[in-house]
Amino acid sequence: MVKIQKFIDTPSQTAGPFLHIGCTPRITGINIFKSELGLTPFQDISDNEAINIKGKIYDGNKEPIIDAMIETWQCDANGNYSSNQGFARIVTDFKTGEYQLKTIRPGNEINTDGYLSPSYITFWIVARGMNRPLITRMYFLENDLKNDLMFQRLNIEDRLKTLIPYTEDEKNFVFDIHLQGKKETIFFEF
Image 1 (cartoon, rainbow, N blue to C red):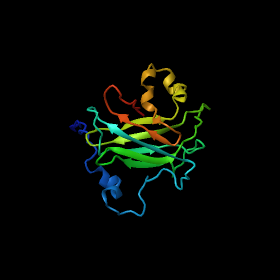
Image 2: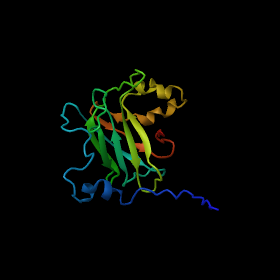
Image 3: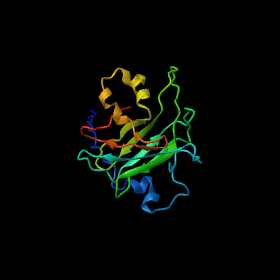
Image 4: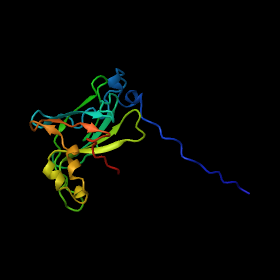
């Protein structure tokens, strides 16, 4: 007779505190690669097309997280995704908790059903103490976001502003991400 052993899931492991050494070694002063994956989402960004995004990721105590890693994914200015461009890996500053990303404004992609999707950048976030990554998006225009089919059936209009950055011009954006609390950013599960 064969005895069947029941296996149980192992506990999840949090990211860090050595996340930067393995994923972004240059930031910690370790230069082992000719080029590091995701330092910039697009090669040769001209000053005309460049935009700057900065912000902080706040924990439930409204404190900036100083050791978070963010991966971003976006389409190009024409709304097309590429296998070798559009990806960036950035980290929050060890002292201030601020992140910075120089990129281009993504175009509107056309979904498989022919619907024109609003312009957005996807953010994938991990940090020490998090058992799984969090995924959110930064949209550029609130009106476009309100017209997105994904949100039309949900009753969360008061929270949609958590996906819109603050800006005083069309080149510089501040996108703060709140993990908990009254300002909690909308997160997605895929």
